[in-house]
Image (cartoon, rainbow, N blue to C red; front, side):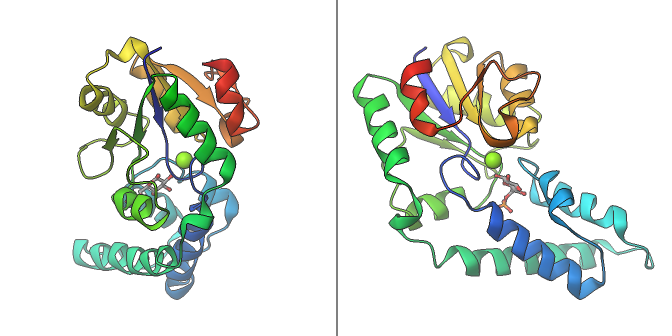
Length: 210
Ligand code: BG6
Ligand code: MG
């Protein structure tokens, strides 16, 4: 292994709760049923694909493209407002120490996230210099489970995909890592997923498994 690629939401920072709150407010305003179980299906999935999943419960008149665009903007505005309150305290010492230790062992580190807000989040929590590359929703066409975001991260790092590990909390992210030909390390929801190569319960376990 030469590189480690980290998912952001749910691995490095716990922004999942903000995604949930923002979608919930948007769905409530539209009278659409939305709960935590539906929210779990949105992990790793792009913003526009997430909206389509939420709209499976929508029973009103067909929505125009303009209306959907407005809904996406509204969700993102609420989400950004919630993110703006984040500080470096939103990253655990365990995450900071583990990242620094991996780097000192010579691993190249990258973020591989479907989010278009990834760089904003890294800046808010003071991790903008902790990674050698960031591949995110702004440089991909297809989101996870497609491997594009991780293959781009490997390309940015100039490391062959077979020499990269991915750390993920979403099953869609594990599928993406395997499709990219990378070692898939799963935590949270992805800990017991059938395609996960190695499950970890604590972030610091990376220092033992890589
Ligand atoms: C992923 C999240 O990291 O980013 C998804 O797991 C989210 O839930 C996706 O939909 C896109 O995020 P953003 O910030 O571009 O809306
Ligand atoms: Mg995630």
